[in-house]
Amino acid sequence: MRLAGLPQLGNEDSRSRYFPSRVTGGCLERRTCGEAPGSAATRWTGGRGVAEGRGLGGEPDRSGWTGLGPLRIVALIIAVGLTWIVVSILLGGPGSGFPRIQQLFISPDNSATPEPRARKYKCGLPQPCPEEHLAFRMVSGAANVIGPKICLEDRMLMSSVKDNVGRGLNIALVNGVSGELIEARAFDMWAGDVNDLLKFIRPLHEGTLVFVASYDDPATKMNEETRKLFSDLGSKNVKDLAFRDSWVFVGAKGVQNKSPFEQHVKNSKHTNKYEGWPEALEMGGCIPRRTVAG
Image (cartoon, helix red, strand yellow):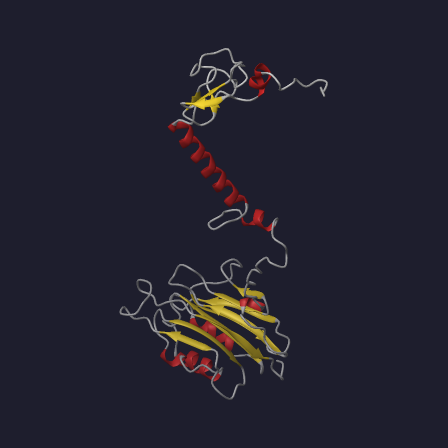
């Protein structure tokens, strides 16, 4: 039986056209290739199965490869390495600078939850104040360079930005019931008149809160009457206040005990943080509203 379109395998020429007769010495020979064994048409380069010069069918080889030389191997390794680096960056691997790209490929359930920032409350306090309390924070001046700050209920009463602070004692008077500012002034205790300070604090009404922050020198012009008035407001350190000390204090007219809101650092060349001045003081807390308004 003869199949149309297919050569008969009954003769030697037909078989040799489609099947190699033998492989010798690394050369693939075909009886119909018309070339001598080992010629350019049938030789295998380096035993890698890449034809050199001509293809297996006698056609010119258009692959462009004559073997994998050392330079090609190095180039392949570099290409693989660069590909790995790019993939690692895009997928947010260790040391990646693009974690947001990684989030595109991660389900929300598996993504890490960032730690929440510490919440700040009124005047930057770490915790809220209870009901019927006033939140405050104050900082004394640093040497004679940085002015003091007094904050109450998230409102800045005195600061360098408000341009209402100065050398000496910085004092803010506040209504102890409503928390409203009554008046704020700075008194120069180095070259000023102490009588101005006395006129300011003598006529205080019952329930008035007094916030005091020092700047540079709080005590050179301070006399005995001044110290007694502050002591009556609840200060326990005013009697020892001296030249260039740091002092912050919150008192009130009519208190029976000493105030818990007071800090004092002595000016000492052995412990001073700045040349000629001690460190600045910071104090914050919650003050109960007064029951008697002035």
